[in-house]
Image (tube, rainbow, N blue to C red; front, side, top):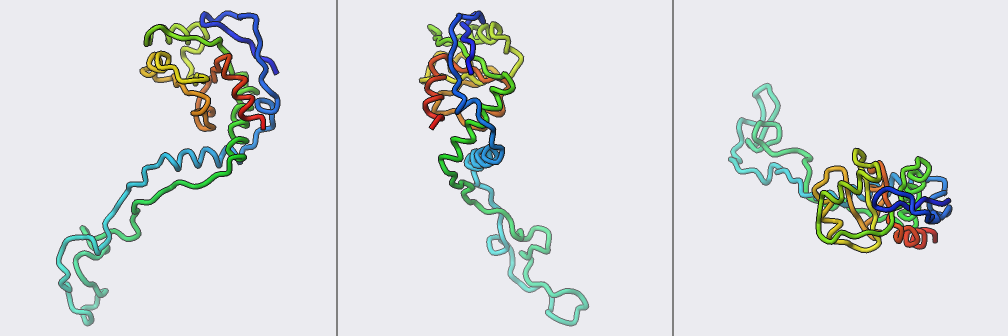
Length: 209
């Protein structure tokens, strides 16, 4: 399929780029998307949660009452989880949530996410551009010209561009990434996917295999 290339003023340049059917036109695999998003979110968890068990609590170990003859349940020290201020039973402890996912599954998940955006006509292609200096006002003007000012957008660059990144950093509904940073999660969470003209062939080449 072909996509129109717009300039930074939102005008049709007359050029077209090819969105490969093997990338943007596949039948999406929802399970692969689920696995890739699950891994992304799991890998971003700190896993630093911690609670204290009875052995880690400070307090007396004196037996509170005799073992038998009281008519109530037996109990040991005050650090028992049964008492207020005691240790916690089966509480969380620090651990790593990361898990492995095959590269082919991750690639299929990204292709599926791109295919969903293509089917929903939520992909825009803009010619390569640069700012002379970081200017949020210029980036807002760009979004306004592309008619995505009120929509959450993801701009994909071929290589890092400091001025473009800094210009967009303070905007709440805008994110800028390079092709290497593009993942299933940030494709799905955006309303409009904005690809630079030079990034399209790179994405086709990277994901078509």
